[in-house]
Image (cartoon, rainbow, N blue to C red; front, side):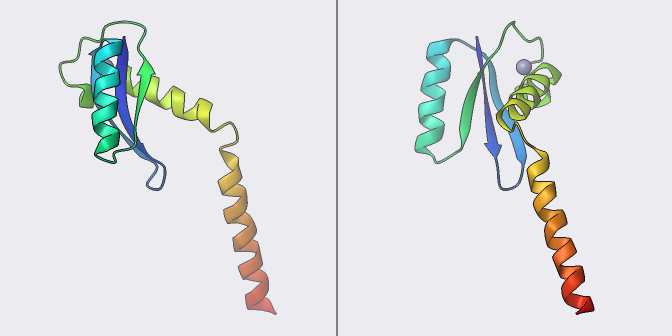
Length: 95
Ligand SMILES: [Zn+2]
């Protein structure tokens, strides 16, 4: 079974679009999303979810968050860059 989510890397937000889909249905939806330029992804869904609305499905949220974390093995990198920039700005002000 598959679920479909859209993930916006710029805004760092995601939306769950569908769940409880067969593999064929998921592939078709993905094609439609991508042709509409929506950054959609399918994820494996180990079991049927009971929520009617995927948007409010806590099981989906858990799966998506897990997938996002596994795709960004070094999530502190951005923080590191931000910190480096802040330090440089502080230096510039004092100079
Ligand atoms: Zn779900």
